[in-house]
Length: 211
Image (cartoon, rainbow, N blue to C red):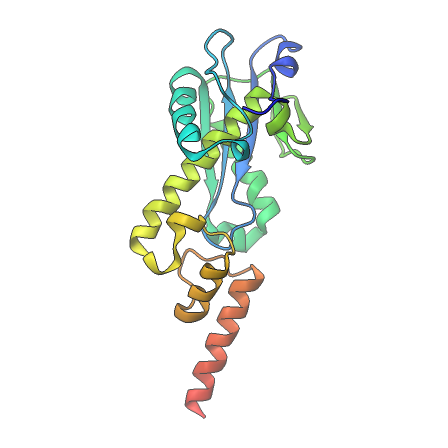
């Protein structure tokens, strides 16, 4: 855990359950965007919760399991097809709305990481760097990260050429080279520039063969 670890201060100011919301997967060129909503219960908060980016993988995995056993959790995603249809920002907002809707109880307040809010039926606040400031948002960041990583690892077994078990769909040099070599898969975001470029190159190559 970092020295300036997140706290329960925001949640403690509210009368009633508070949900923290975060997403993972806005930047990758493959795979869905995943959001989680977490309502922590005072007295049952697992030790060591922090911004998922500040934690080692084994620690994230352990905390994911502990959070889901002790907290109210909603998890949702927006697919690659949805991302391409409505853009990544709107798809992220959709995944967040779905995650909150899947909570087993209604929150009195929703704290969303970042500076934008999805359209929610509950009072909500946007909190910049929320995953480093609020325990509930940090917990949501852990759940979303682990769920998405596990999904990309499963997809990697079907598409081993792209290395998704290591890059999680992000635009690494190896991933870009694999897309250039093999072409995009059904799980690549065609609205993202690197994938569009690969599709254009593929089309140009096919046209050249017919001339």
